[in-house]
Image 1: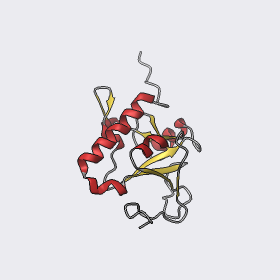
Image 2: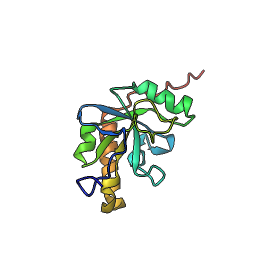
Image 3: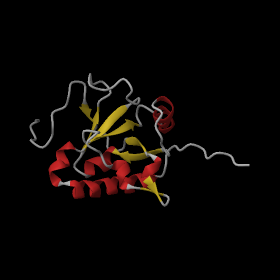
Image 4: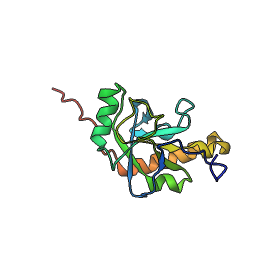
Length: 155
């Protein structure tokens, strides 16, 4: 553990992001859209994620490139790149970790990969985490999609 008992240590090559204005691209799966709105699930980490919600850094990659990597390279579904800022995340007492230089990052990781670290907030319970995810979703929706695929031409 770090000097703050609630925050896990960083791995070699990881660094905490501090530019509050930097945007973080989050790919939103079609299942996380209901009645035209993103659900908070899009910003809720799972056990599979080890409570580390994947994002890509706008300082290093465009929203379009992040989306293309997700859909074309990884073959995963996404309705588009939505953004929260480092400041939005920090306001929730969470941190954003750039792990692109970490020896633990997977080869398939998106360019400019980082993660929103929910691990320090786990003791607060699932209900609290859902509220945090909902506020992050609200921030992303307020900005709108920064990149979404063009709808197919019908006709």
